[in-house]
Length: 314
Image 1 (cartoon, rainbow, N blue to C red):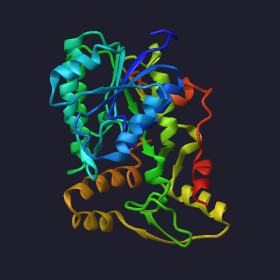
Image 2: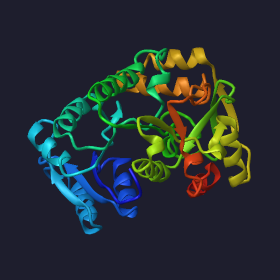
Image 3: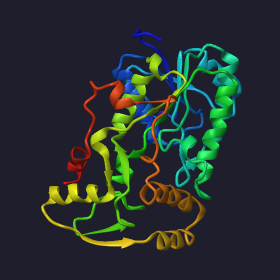
Image 4: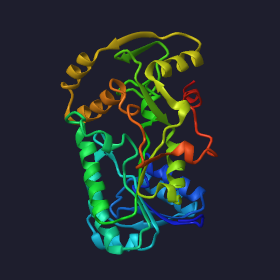
């Protein structure tokens, strides 16, 4: 696609990752469009965020998944479409809405790259995932199938563990601030996972939209210094605070039994924790010909290490 600047449409641009994608796209000098629903109502935080994007040079577009014509019109303005709508059940699980976006992109016929909302565990590696958490991966694979059947040029981004959700709670589900006293290890705490600063996810993603090496491939964001076990994350935190935490552990069986007592949305998220923290699903495969690794493609990006990320909690 070359080095010239792109026209980039970001769908879900006011969300947790979406707002970072808007910022990274603008910082890279791309002409950036942000799609927002017409029915914002009195969500003043969202309105002010959109206005801040506009002040930084973004173009605001009104559109809706319920209005096919508005999607097509928005898509016709750009070269690249990035979707960052939520796939997290404890928020809103909207992955299959992207099928409408795929239809609009196919009809418009001008998009050179589509990046659907993935950004977590590679769903293609999760065909043996447990219920009910596998719905996330199954839905993402349905979107991939639609993209590929429509012949749309694409890039899938597997960003592994969002640092805020995992590092903040020392890899403990339901916690986002690290304790200075106690931590519960999931099993023996030794399976490695991969943690990525959310701003770094956005930077790597925006880099990939221009790159012929990422066309029709999966980009794995796996910074080598951030491939660590829960125990290693805890040790980094202990070093930073200068004291050792009291540790207890929860076995696989105890974790699964407790999970079944939660509501559906919680069970979906806990299933993902199980695969990551007990089975090591993020690191138990080799990246094949269908994938590339972001920190190798873009060594010029000084990514945030786990220790650097955790210093903000001091």
